[in-house]
Image (cartoon, rainbow, N blue to C red; front, side, top):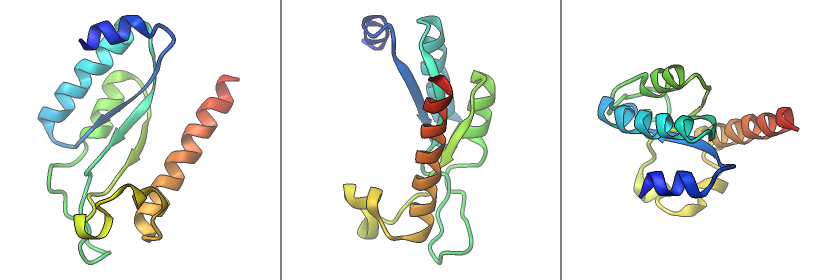
Length: 123
């Protein structure tokens, strides 16, 4: 199914999403390799659930560390963002994209700027 989608969308640009866990990185790497084999552009990698900050200061790396960087390096692209794991009771709905929570707001804003710059460079 995934290969069919890659073949039916010949001008696709992809963002590869993973978590820091080695198994997730392996699966995402296969997706990236398939993207390259079908001549898709990989815009970059996003590492989701990178860390957890229950008190807003100390970071806990629940699923490991560095998986997104490793994946970006192996695919020859950039790590666009490392998105923290958010507590569901606080950020469990789509409004997280417009959250006033400082850490998430900063991460999503930086991601948006990186993507805008990437598209501007391609013009």
